[in-house]
Every structure is written in C-alpha cells, then in structure tokens.
Image (cartoon, rainbow over all chains, first blue to last red; front, side):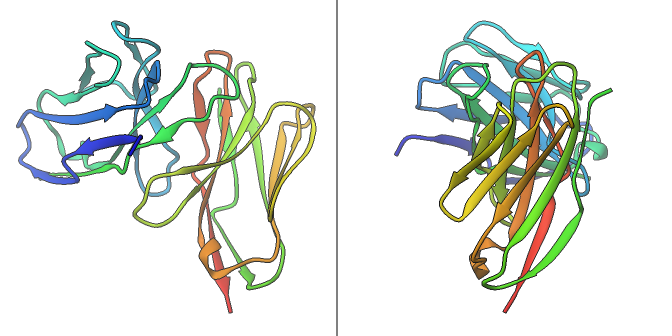
Length: 114
Length: 109
C-alpha cells in the first residue's frame, strides 16, 4: 500500500539521550517534511527537503537534524533530547514543493522526554 | 510576521450546516489548504484554493478571498463522523505551509 510509514509509533525517552525517528515513503515524492504538533499550536515545520540530497531549516529546527540520502527516507534525529521536545511528530511528503501539491502525512510518532 | 487565525472550537448538530472561518497573513501566497484531523490520527487533505471563489466537493466546500486574506470551509449535512479538527494552512512564497492551530468541531445528535 502506497504511503508514508513512521517508526516508532511511540517512545518514552530519558532526557539527554539520542533518538532517531524514521520516515519512509514509497510514492517517489520529491519533497519531505518533519512537523511537530503540540496542543493549542498549529503544526510547526522543523526541517524539510525539497529533493534528495538537500535539506532546509523550518520554523523550529534547534535541537533537531535531518538527512536525505535518497528519495524514500527522511530520518529526524534528536541529538540530546530535552523535555520540551515532548510532542507528536509527523512526517509528510509532497510530489513537488509547489502550489497545489497536497502534503501526505504519516501516522505520527508520539514522543515523551522525561 | 506570518499568522493563521481560526476558532478553537465549534459545536453543531447532526444534519445541519457549519462554516469554519480562517484568516491568514503570509509572506507571499501560493494557496490555501484545508485538512481534517481525527483525534489521534494524521491530517488528511480536504481542499485547495488559489483563486477567489467557491470550490465544491460533495458535502464540503471551500471559499477563498485573496484580497481579504480570508477562507472558510463549509460542511453540509453534518454526520457524526465529521467530528474532528479542521486545519487551515496557507502556502507562503517559499511553498511552505503555515498552519493554524485547528478548529475542533463537535457534532451533537
């Protein structure tokens, strides 16, 4: 089934630990995105990639890093987790980063940092 | 700065009509999206407007006024399954989406 998968579904993490959230899409989309969603706030863009081999910073990039070695995978790494990074993380993709191109979302990863 | 405003919560009755408003301010504009998000799930695409006017898609319609920085989502013949959050997002000049906090729609029988 075509779409986006994320792993893990949920995770409880001790502060200071390193964590990588995985995201894979099989739609051959060029653009991929990482968002965090917190209660009372809109989705906030962490990092994005318009095409394989390139990445860019979104609205809230501090404490996070990404890589885009190929079209399908876009992992998000927290180098040293802090409690303020407790959130639901969504990966998304779109065919191209242009007007009219809807973003498709993965099921999300619920991360708790203690 | 960039900003999206929409009501936090609305309540409507099954079978009725509800209009969810959204105002936006962005650096450049490349269209307005509406997404639906059920509790605990991912957002799913509902509509996209880039020109002024009304786009109808079954029970759902979306309207855009670029001059007023305003959009609304109209849901007709409400069903219990329409209980969800509705997210408004404007695409800026860099083709990135600026998201509102969402409107939680509660449907009562």
